[in-house]
Length: 299
Image (cartoon, rainbow, N blue to C red; front, top):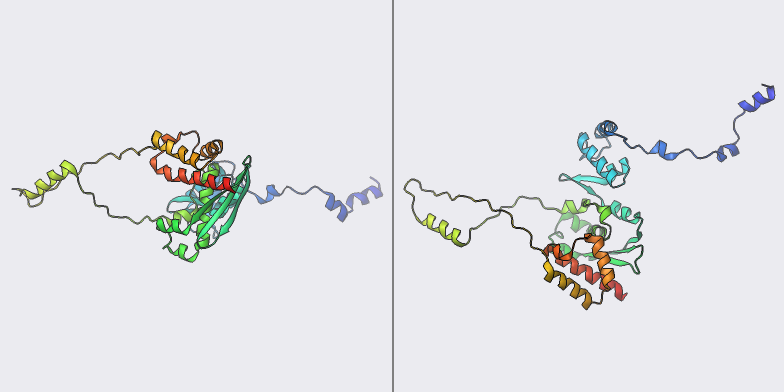
């Protein structure tokens, strides 16, 4: 090798040459994902012992693993899952902010924005590919009061944020069920009152008469008569039925809702299940959907 060639080989690259180099793959350096169960177990143990690990997961590598797996199912990176999936009362929940972001990133989403938020109402406007017009979903303080939520501390102190969170989860479940995947938001689970309640069950009918007669007849062997407790099977939920189905469609026709658009939204929310096969508890949600479509048509 000549002296000129050696000098050229040892010379540092110019700043211009450095700029022309292809960028280093960022993902390879900044994003770590366990590739198998062994790596997941090792990673979970490291995270569970870290000082920055969320309190609910600290010292619980198995719970960390569950959160990471749930996050992977939702398309989240490991660190995003650890930061945004919160374990509350034994449930893995997703923050409303992340849920909104996931809906916005959905391939079919053209709009998912909070367009109204105050201490009385929060409204989310949604538009999916192929829709002629966007639809709006709201949650009001009156609904919160009827559900017994408005008296809770977080609702008193952060009313607007809680209304936005509820409107977000309602819109996400209605129009992006594949994003929610059955998950509850952090805000929803925190509102759940799991205080044990004493329920008094009173016998009725002929059984009541039998117990009354037993109580009135003194026992020769004991002062207390113990009634046998018979376990009863939980009744099957009552279905909407053909009549309920016809009521929903009649309301849609009355409000001049496009039948094709109604069927599209019903399919998004309930899949291929017929309305008559849904439970009667679904009637209020179905009627609300019809009214929302009617409002959207008038705009």
